[in-house]
Amino acid sequence: MFFAPASITCFFTPVIGKNPAETGSYGVSIALNKGVRVNVSDKLLVNDREVRFPTVEYVLDALGGKGVEIETDFPLSCGFGMSGASALAAAFAVNEENGLNLPFYRLADLAHEAEVVNRTGLGDVVCQSYGGIVVRVEPGCPSNARVERFLWRLELDILVLGSLKTEEVLSENIDFSVGKDCLKEFMRKPSVENLFVQAKRFSVETGLIEDVMDVIEAVEASGGMASMVMLGKAVFAVNGYEALEEFGEPVRATVSPYGVRFLF
Image 1 (spheres, rainbow, N blue to C red):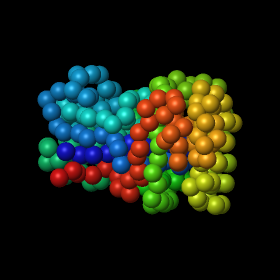
Image 2: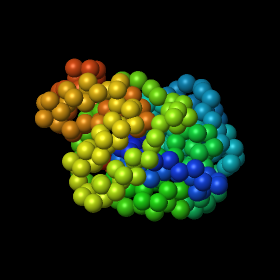
Image 3: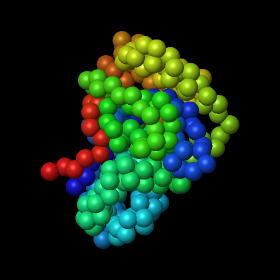
Image 4: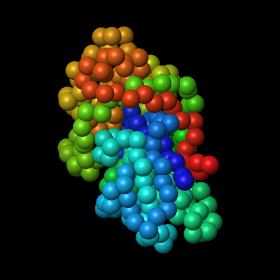
């Protein structure tokens, strides 16, 4: 069984290159200790349901896999990189099962390519390949991207309120260029507090924060820090569990220092 971490993107700026290897995003994402677990199977199942999953199917076709069983800790299309994590763990599971002996970056780049082609993500797989708090200093596939990592011990309170389709949001007339400014400001003073400052700035200036503003304000009023998960109708916070309980059923997760890996 292979595990790939969920990821929370704090802010980003898309970069569309000439091909999937050159396509990606600037930004910062957080790998979580929750994510997906994948086993090889004869069918493609997600949480015991047979489904169409184009991003994973792309990987299976490329590696000659029949199917995989995927168990997720978060719902799809809610901003936690479930598509990227599923494609990544599936690539490693099929590689192991079929004895392909493909190198790490070949598999990680394939999962990234599957995301780009199917318009389900631009940077999740990079974060999920490395683990930790991952700064994408230069965009691209995992083997091309230039990253910096912070292995801060951090407990996050998370509340999922609904879904957003990445493809639909990216097709809207939203100026994501502020993500590069947030990245520069974060790297001038890398800290948990500044990460939340820049994450909230990004969600405010892009106009995406409207649906979750009241939740974020409630966390801040209780003394915590919070921002919106990109791209999903969800909130992540530090010291915000009780405030989040007013709006739903939050979960807790920690930063995973590891990326995709085999579970014994």
